[in-house]
Length: 274
Figure 1: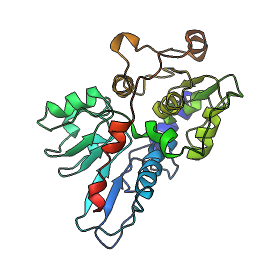
Figure 2 (figure 1 turned 30 degrees about the horizontal axis):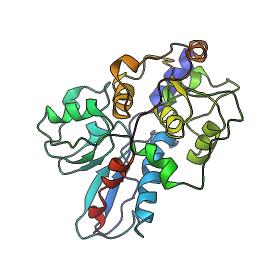
Figure 3 (figure 1 turned 180 degrees about the horizontal axis):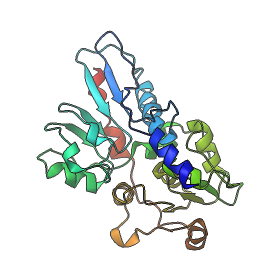
Figure 4 (figure 1 turned 60 degrees about the vertical axis):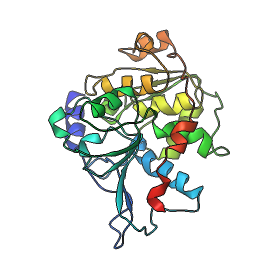
């Protein structure tokens, strides 16, 4: 099992492909992280899905030619990839990355994932508004008629990519390597979600399904989980996690989000396409 985990980790090095592609005219690049082995992690893929849906409401597309080229960082713990002049809408800092990896000196921040990321940026002289939330929280509102919780299954297990080998044979597995729509539908069939995938937790809680963070390994830093929890209305005393699936089942769901999505939705940088 440890050998499998080591092999997967080697294959999941950072990639920095812009989802909008290398278009031959001025456009907005949507920057994201993806595994270098060519697979697709559903949480990072949601950056493309959510951004395109937000644009579609206004009759716009990521492929549109714009007057001034720009780069946008949305979903993901990807701020160590940020370059001066980038736009940020909902991204967060990755606590396991050495802080020296952050080299941007000027960012146009429209929203960040949570207050811990805001504090990180403000300490470096970057202006950050008090607008928090992972844009995946908007899915129930921007896909109103597509997804619905059905409570057919007692629970599901949604690991992050590094933890996938640890639960790959679990009968309740929802793999982060499946298509984003399949992952969401599987989560929404559950009455309860156990997840080390941050976006497994976010999807569940956005749709009102109780969820518990299960720390299946020490690979991920707690920073991003706390950042999301605090950015969605929970406090330090309300943050707790399970160390095994059995413990997670015993603990039950974390306190529900206390979150108004409207500020994050209105913070979307539509002006980049005008």
